[in-house]
Image 1: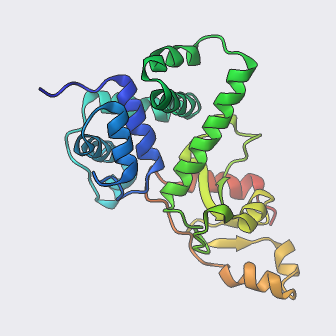
Image 2: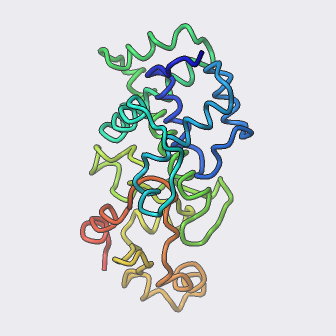
Length: 252
């Protein structure tokens, strides 16, 4: 007899959905197998649940790609929970995962503590875990490659916030507010030296243009000017965030 998925299990499934590149949801994936062992379910059941979550992703609907059609009421509820409050659900799902790995009996009590009055230590832990979730989710959405240069060395990649962390607290953990950039492009993007136009093509600031005689500027920036970024493979479009970056962050 099949047992219904609990909210805790669905939160962990959604956590994994966010952190796996699209197309890596199959039952032989080591992370799928790891979660199946934690949940005491089969890898096939976990893979199917991930596919059902994918069927709720509007980005895939726009591309005409669908997961399995059996998304449940619980699937939809958890999907909505994450999208309504990324910061809370990111931290909660990461804490749950850690607790389920170390001591499954403590998972429910840990979830409760997330919503109760928190200590400074717990607050800092939640911030760290939310940042960890954001990085993994953004890099997975771009299939572990810089969306401009295609660099795929993890230590050189940054989950870059389109809207700055300090100025847009409500979007700090939203994967839609992220680009996977190499560290040099991340710094330039953060400082408003580069942005993307309405067609998602790279635009350079005058400051970079003035420095073009430098060979390094030509090699690292001018070479990519006008190139369209490689769009993420999960979640809705990033255009609305990039539009704000052009208007509020970019230095023409």
